[in-house]
Image 1: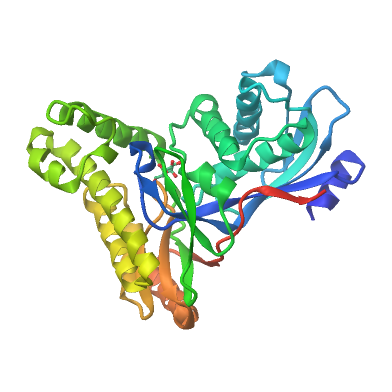
Image 2 (image 1 turned 180 degrees about the vertical axis):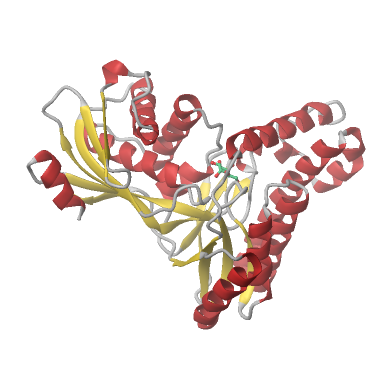
Length: 381
Ligand code: GLA
């Protein structure tokens, strides 16, 4: 389909096709910007770009999903190109140039089946797909984690969203059938096998995030304030990652009430993620699932990034047969619940989750059974 559209737009066959996946996060939510540990998987939904080197002195992009064109070149940056969606590829061009990497102009057509604004990192997947495309045309090589960091910079400094590294990391470094454990401080990572008889089910509430960017920045600010105050008694800390649960309990009374709730989520979530990895390695899926349920409660009650529809989805999912654990995934304020479900129960689980959610909210959800997939790369050419 993409090749066909490319031929219609540009009159020849594209030289290459790149792909970069979205991600689902199983544990470690809102901890990447606190130097914590995250446990996402790349999913089998992705952004695809068909592209060729351009003959004209600019990059011409056609977005299939918006049916719209954008044109820009390294010389016009950092001015923002017309349509909003074009800020992601233009931001990647800008960040690559800032890193001294060539971004030859290209003709490109792209599309994505990662739902937008659903907490599955559609923007990171667009960024990573373009980074791979420019690496292909630019004649340079940067390892996946290096590309992820450049794309994060594009999002932070060009698009203006202050995200952590998790999404770009998962899209860049994901591996088939694996969960990816990342230490967000050292950037060391490790692939962990998903238990064999278990599926990841993603259920989209169909409620799109609103006010997410400012609320996200508020949460980050609360974490920074907690570190600033706790430093008075724990001078060696530089991030909430450095505070143990015991230390936190000892000194929590020094924090304003709201800051305490936010920081408690982070400190406990980092501990949960470390414990979850041990349980996974021992094959204790039930224990792992319990931690996912605890994570949802903490995001709802302490970090306060859930919404009623996510709570209904998580509650219904948690009550169904074969569900080990379920929780909102991604930044929150809308989007999806991820559940870990016994393989034999998946079909009935999806059906009952759909009807349970519909009767609880009057809304129609989308349900995907996800495969953990490989990270970004060329798929053709
Ligand atoms: C968004 C950000 C990530 C991460 C999550 C919350 O997806 O892009 O960096 O902070 O929210 O865990």
